[in-house]
Structures are given as structure tokens and as C-alpha cells.
Image 1 (cartoon, one colour):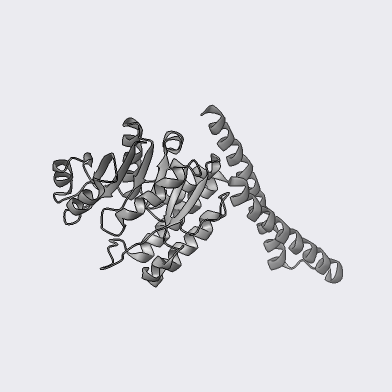
Image 2 (cartoon, helix red, strand yellow):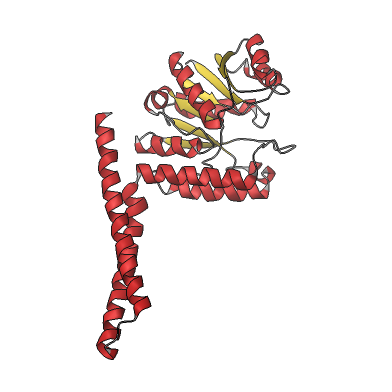
Length: 293
């Protein structure tokens, strides 16, 4: 089994050499995506024998993962393990995420921070954000996962060949899970250890959380339009009908139309109808695209 470890890296010259040294004994191929670094990240990785993909400018975490997927398919690897270049992950855990794939028990394996005591090391604001986004992602999955945002993952050759990620940002983590589940691939989780010494994140927690949440909602709306638009649409229609009945009742009793209530009834019915029509149109378009692919 040919195992590749892929590292998205941005200005990681302080860490990249030591991490690649540790990875040499556990991977057949080392791939580094130098995502527009301004330091020596790419040169160091290249001198250490890694296959280096260079982005001329910083395009984002998602774009780096896309490049790692493409290179892994080009190199015909059996398993791609994505591994952070900032020193948070433990090399010893690579075998844990690879084993379920090698044993044919899973197609995508997540190294989860919420299956052991590692969650105790996660800053509270991150823990809260991860859990919220994970619950949102779980609404579209066949499995109930604990950590949708972990970047420590293993992908089988089948997933690499079938799934085409598109998000350039951090929303790619949820995007891949949604697409993997929709293609009936098996997703599994294993516990990993992680270090947050020095808080290595370069993203502002609020803007980062909002970006990931919006990206996740975008992919949910694309992949499950009937659920995303249709259910709220039915809800608004029901509310509109209730206000309509209330308006008619008031009219029968007073012979006067209560403007505020009647406008609310009309508005919610129109909005609910628009949401339902949107869900049907997007569902039809999505199915047409899937059939042609």
C-alpha cells in the first residue's frame, strides 16, 4: 500500500524540517503544498526530498488541500494522509488513521480531538466553534461524527478519485465530508493527540468561525436543497396560513381588516412559496448535474 502524507504549509520554515524528518519513516511519499509562503518553507521541503507544490500566492487552506488531492491522484497513491505543518499533530497517530482504510473498514478516517482527553487541550472558544460547525455538518451526513474540522485525515484512493473539493478556505473540511457521505463512502473516526502550545492559529476566531459556518451552509444548500430551503419554506407557509385564518376571523367579527396581521400573512406565504420553488429548482438542477457527471 502506497501511503502519501500531504502537508498544507504557509510560512512554516521553523517546523517543516523537523516534521518531514519524523514523517520519513511512516510514509512512502511526502507532499508539501507551499501555499505562497514568504519564507524558505518550499526550499527546505524540496531539499529534504519532499514533492513540493508551489502556489505563487497564498490561496488558502482549501486550495492547498485541493492541490494535495490532485498530486496524490497523479502519483497514484493508495492512501493520502493530510497532516498539519505547524507541529500540532503526532506522527505516531498516522497508523491509527490509516488502519481502518487498509482493513477496508472505512474510506475516509478523521483523527478526532473529541474521542479522548485531547479535547482538554483545545482552547474553549475553539471547542465551542468546532462543536457548533460539527452539529451543522452532521445534519447532512449518514454518520454522526464528533470532529468535522480536524485536518488530520486519511483518504482512500476511491475517495481521491471521486471527490473534487472546490472551497479555497477552511470550509473545505465540511465540504469533503458532505460529498463523501453523499457518495455513500464510509466515514470513521479515531482518537488522536494534539498540541496547542502557543496557539498556532493565524486566523481571528470570530472571522474564521463565520467563514467556516457560511461555507458549510453553502454546501448544505447545494447538496440538500429540499432540506435546506424546503423545510423552512413549509414552515413559513404554515405560519402564513395561520395568520390568514386569524385575519379572516378578525374580519368576520369586526368587519375590519387588520393591516399588520394581513400583511404578515401575505408576506410569509409569498416567502414560503419562494423558498419551496427555490428548493425544487435547485434539486432538479443538482440531479441533472449529477446525472451528467
